[in-house]
Image (tube, rainbow, N blue to C red; front, side, top):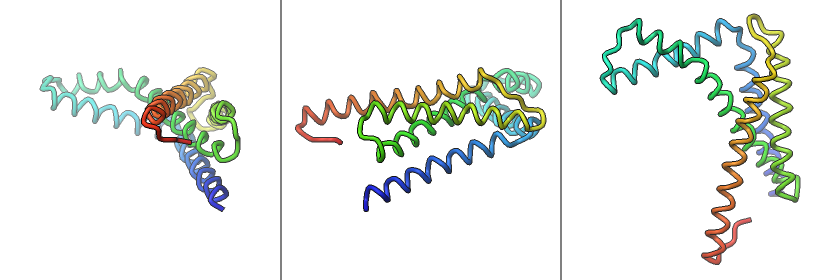
Length: 166
């Protein structure tokens, strides 16, 4: 019963995260740019105030425009890193071998990234970019790599402490 509940809960979490990604991708370009541009402007304002940079409003806007692209791509990578981790937890309840769990999670994120880009093709002002699929898949890879090495370190520590972590 516990395994079945685990599968249901982790599956719901992964699908819910996919729905969140879908909702972001469903925004027209103007709306999406307004959101990310506003965030970047607030980041630059905070940096200006905190670091006492004495930037003018025009300089802040210019800086916000310069960082918008990398901030957007970092956000995509983070979204897909989380999707990779949620997918891994789902496959953990289904597949026995850990290598297959990692591979299935990565493939799920990559396929979802491709379908998400296809979806964006039909949204006003948006486009479908192969490079974005690669960036999203890289995000999932990084998230899964961090998980892999974290598990390795924790298991090594637990082994030294004569504890077990399954």
